[in-house]
Image (cartoon, rainbow, N blue to C red; front, side):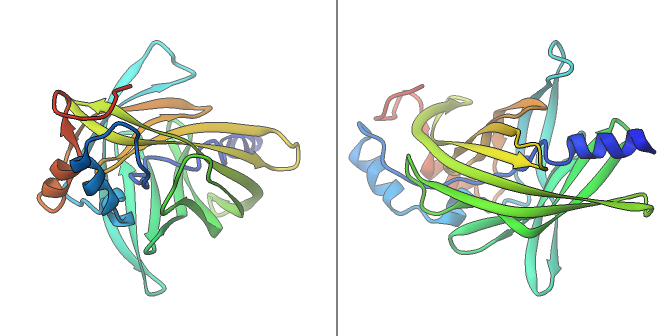
Length: 253
């Protein structure tokens, strides 16, 4: 049981932003007037697609197995009402990971995440208050901080609580290529201090307009989106917000 407790503590906040499909807006120098006009009309929900029939195809590499890369699929597994609020569970079934998310007009919040402690044990982490992991709009240089406490209930026998302080920073906005299309991409870093030892854990997350999460680098793994297949509710907007690589007016990274 001591081993289980230690593993839960070590893995407790190894990942705050787990397979979440969100972003925000800015202007890229050199883009065409058509693109500039389209992006000027962005709203938060454009960049956080509630695409229940969409599929996000990722490659994931766990850092304890650097020579092994897996193909996984992200999707919205279910929608649930809690205390009068609508929550979306963005998950990756093959990894048994995911976040329970609530959206406001200009913000997104993580209420619960599912985190693997061992290859065969998965624990729910409750966040109080929920973590505001993204805001709208975002521009390079924006920062915000969040304080929260996480709770893990282990096999109904005992609880583990841990306080966290997180600083989010919008690093840059760039054009990137996804499956032959140009995507407006927001690169955000977060710095998480958990527990009382003062150690800082750094993560990097890239979010694509009309797409969602495109890249993630954490202490536990790296994740890269290789293809997004929008469902019927988001397909038209996805095609409007992204461009064939040979037609885009902005630079490509």
